[in-house]
View 1 (cartoon, rainbow, N blue to C red):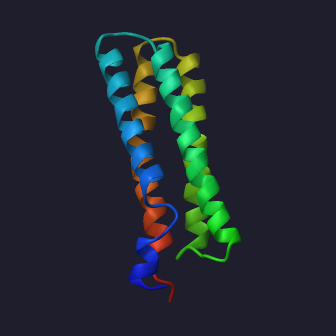
View 2 (spheres, one colour):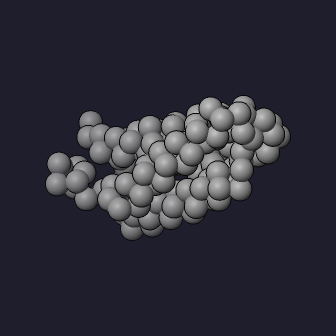
Length: 131
């Protein structure tokens, strides 16, 4: 895989950027709620749902690329990060609903801060040169 191939990876681009931005906006919303001693609200849960849709779209694009013959540099790590990525927002929503205090908002904030890291790791495992 060359540098040009890595630049055109299916996990880079608008979907990845939108996922990161949406995740950080939701994290900020949840952080403000936690600082104000507020439980998770409808806005946080809607943010998690929209984030999940964006991450599912990113996963579909990646799976279509793999089905089309493209290969990530580290397939095992790539698919591990991909599965983890699509599981994070639903997990945050369930845990936040189970904890209807400021800590529920803290859970949403923490998960939304982890999500961009996992997106970047997903990109890195696609781009790793096999050897």
